Length: 223
Image (cartoon, rainbow, N blue to C red):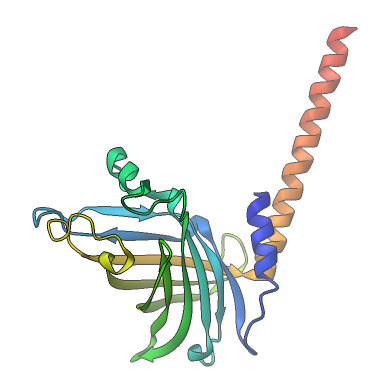
């Protein structure tokens, strides 16, 4: 909780374009699915479930928007323990040396419908940076009725060649091309940071009260 608060507080002060709203990617409701072909027989998937970052979104002119995101590979899971061990090893992501992937947008373009965008940016995986383009669908902008925070949500898809990032082991038996589908929710950064601070303060007070009760109980028992 403390780490999340520190991150959100820092992101709230990221310089945003004029008229853009700064959002913090909400890690509890953001994730990605990676799909590949295994020998042509099946199409397994893996999920990365911790995405953190900041989105500056200009609703009047989305082409002026930008996003920076970080994916923690320690939270990448296929549901198959042996395969997850391979992912973490030096043969694949080598997460001891390269624990994260990063994406930093360089261009945002409209893509026909009002809620469709193409977002091009630099993706860095295992120390290798390549330009990739995400096909983005804006799901919703509004007040989240659960948290009462201004929020935004979107889907993003792309296709990558893993060999472009030095991850080409077992090609072509296991497909070089992988499909990625990301779903993200983000909350207005200052409001989100304020909420996290309130949650952290409440948790600290609960801990203080619990510690005092325990101390009082111990003192009573020693009488």
